[in-house]
Length: 111
Image (cartoon, rainbow, N blue to C red):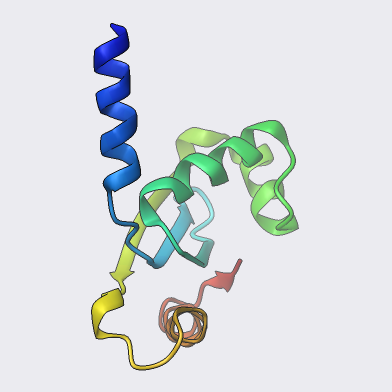
């Protein structure tokens, strides 16, 4: 990548708007699901899968399932995006409420 292209890519990344929301990680082998919230859905899977590959994820049941069944058994899905412009209360509160809803609805362990 040329220097100019790199600068343009960095500038575009800085201008993008983060989209917060709720996601689910599922193990196809066991049927287990884990639900989480993130202030930026575009980056959460990269961060989460990195910690799982390194064996450093803090959620023990998720890390144990990853270790036992391997990366190919897992899927990542965004289940809800939060529109920041329509928020009445704080983002943290909304994400916490929506995570509770999706964890209960999907019978997923919150992470």
